[in-house]
Length: 371
Picture 1 (cartoon, rainbow, N blue to C red):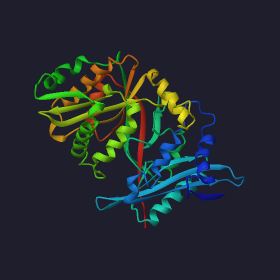
Picture 2: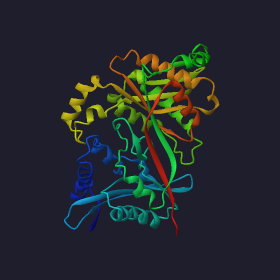
Picture 3: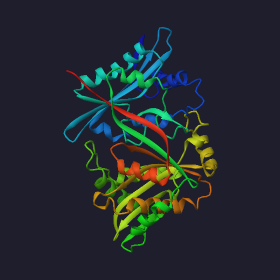
């Protein structure tokens, strides 16, 4: 066995990092390769701000014949006077001994960098991408969503990892949406002139990015690992996401012009990207632009309300306004809302009452390191 550390984007080891997936998923018709350029941005010190306060490392593992059988990435970040460590982008053949070697390589590196707790599998970036282990699914893998063989669960849990967060994904269609249950609740806000619900206007993108940052930084401040957003970094992300967005898919809530909530969706890119084999070439970008009006699913990537407006009907107002706008987009048949953590029981309860169907479960694990 040989362990290779990735050191440059153009290296042979970098190619092997992706070749592992070809071996693991060669017989899996459901698997959709991640876009390689998306992953490479995460490990590019010039593009990922987390390198300002942290580090990341990747490895590929070869058998005696030189074939790649596993890969993993480990990373840590210093924030809020604490060092946060984790690993992700894990792939390995169905062999407990080999998987133990792969995971313990990441653990050893994290331990050497004084990480006391490990989260896994996670991303060296935002939670809405590549986060959590897939436990069950009844729908296609979504864009930037982890998709894993079932045996990964035992490989991870056998090594002492315990579930930290259960993340659930729900979907809803026009036929299953129980609108009548929420009309009265939504009317408390939608019928009150002090409240306003608006969809995103790309012509005034800077204003909506500013409002998003304001809401996000208030709504997520209570999370222990919270990192504030800035206007410039988010503006760049919104510009990059624009081809995957429709103005009807991003709704903002205001109270007397104060930004208090948002519900942001994007088109489900994997409906097109599944044909690209992980390559977002110039030709594939053109193919996407020519085909995106055939995408039938939208994916909710973030839903947030500032704390002092919880339980005032804003949640229902955002959903009803989004539903009203989506009905005008004839191509869309299904809405998916992902990353609903088990620490948010009110949202889970609301989705069930709306008629949403549970389609996926992911687990984020945690393990304490002994020194």
